Image (tube, rainbow, N blue to C red; front, side, top):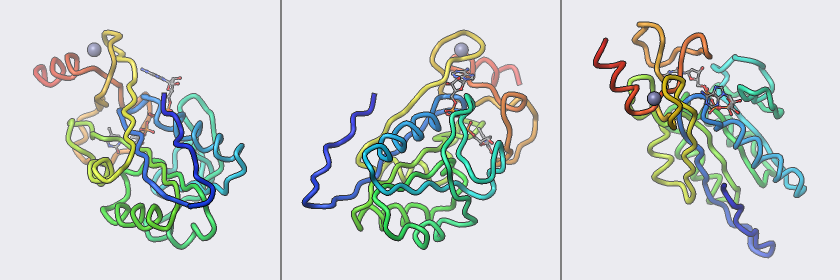
Length: 193
Ligand SMILES: Nc1ncnc2c1ncn2[C@@H]1O[C@H](COP(=O)(O)OP(=O)(O)O)[C@@H](O)[C@H]1O
Ligand SMILES: Cc1cn([C@H]2C[C@H](O)[C@@H](COP(=O)(O)O)O2)c(=O)[nH]c1=O
Ligand SMILES: [Zn+2]
């Protein structure tokens, strides 16, 4: 479990946390858990997600288990800077869908003294690093990799296997479109295909 860094109230110091893993690994639940605890601590919290992710809700980040928190959809990473005026904590979900400029945005916020918590897929359906997440992992002070349960064998899953033959990297979907699998099962699937 991630343990929050003690906040030194005399000096406002920012940092970056990344929560990554496959689909269904609990990234959004963990993001919501950290943000709700910050709200309980009376911190000023803003949550953003890419406008492209229209699943579940326009104005909420929602987990597969239906826990939710209010959020603002943004068309581009630069909007996050504009909308984060007097904020102590910024949460960003589905960060794999932003372009590389999200790295600069997170850096700028952290340098300003903001705690930035970013959740996103570390790998796409091919097992290839996804968008800006690897770069964010390199810059972050704290990286938490969470795991789903492999639907084929019950081991820890780190891959998101796409059930269709669609080859484009971005394809929104849920259980009808993806299943979380472990290394062994991911290899077996790819040998068969
Ligand atoms: N194969 C699975 N392994 C783990 N959790 C699963 C699985 N299938 C469904 N879930 C549900 O997904 C929830 C995690 O959802 P969520 O936080 O939205 O994940 P993520 O954001 O990583 O896709 C779990 O608490 C569980 O209820
Ligand atoms: C693996 C993979 C996933 N996606 C899409 C599918 C979902 O809409 C999101 C991931 O959501 P989650 O909160 O992590 O479950 O990303 C994609 O577009 N391309 C991929 O390769
Ligand atoms: Zn498996």
